[in-house]
Image (cartoon, rainbow, N blue to C red; front, side):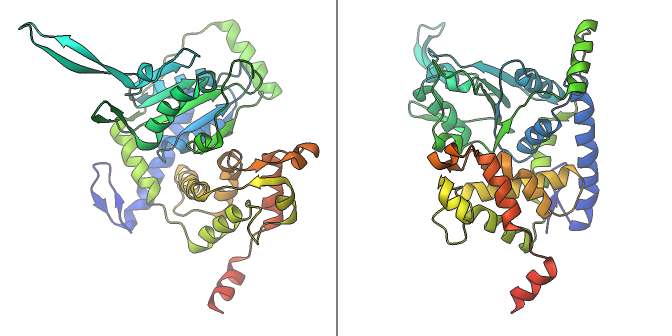
Length: 351
C-alpha cells in the first residue's frame, strides 16, 4: 500500500505509522485549542473532526443555547482556511448562496457578464438553521455539497479544497421550518446530536462566563495539510473482517433483507443504503488515524454506527408507539448482531 507525504509524494507503508503518530499529535493540538473555548461535548467534537478528515459533512442537531455555532466558529479559528457563515431564512434564495451573474460595464464602455461568487466558495461553511429555508434553496446548498461545484448559467465552477459543510438544525421549533427530506439528509456523513452538558461541565461554563476573557486561538492546520491528512486517512488499512462486519450491520438495518432481525422488520420502514456502509468505513479510518492506529477495528465501526446511521433508518408507527428511536434500534442491533471471533471467521471463510 502507498500513502502520501505532506508534499503529496508516494511513500511506503513503513512510513505510514510515522505519519499516523504525527496525525495523533495534531489531533491533540486541535483538541487543546478547542478546549480553550468549548467545555465538554467530546464526542461531538471528535465526530466533526472525523468528518473534516474524510471530506464529509456534518449536521448538528440540538436545542438552542448549546454552543453549536460557537463550536464551529472555534474550529474555523484553529484551521488556516476560509470560513463563511450562512444564516438560513425563509427569504434566502439559491443565488444568495452560490452567487450570481451581473452585467458589468468596463471603463471602455464595453459591457460584459461577470460572475460574483457567493459565500459557498469557502473551505468551511456554517449553514446555520438549514431547515429554515425553502426546499429550492436547500437543494442548491445540498447539490453543492454533493458535487463540490456549482453551475450558474452555462458555466461550472469548482469549490475550493478542502470543502466541508457543518449545518445546524433546531429539533424543537417546527413552525416556519422546512424539514430536510431523507434523500437530502443522506448527503450528511454524520447526524450529530448535541445534548445538554454534564453537571460539572455546565458549572465550568458558568464560571468562565463571569471572567469575560477574550481567548485568542492558534492556527494549527493549513488547507494543504488538511488535504494531505484526508489522503492519509484513506490509506489506513481496513481488513476483510471489519468490512464484513460493516456489511452485516448495514444490511441488517433493512427490513426487506433476510438477515434483518425481527425487531427491525417490525419497526423499520427503510434501512441504510450503500452510502451508509461507505461512511462507516471512512469514519472507522478517521477514528483509527486520530488515535494513531495502523488499522481499523470493529469498535471503530460501532463507535460510528449511531451518528452515521441514525438519519438513514426510517422508523414506522410501531416504533413510535413503543417509544423506540433509530438510536435505540441501532444499539439493539449492535447487541443482537454480535461480533464473530476472528479465528472462527477465518475458519468459516476457509471452509
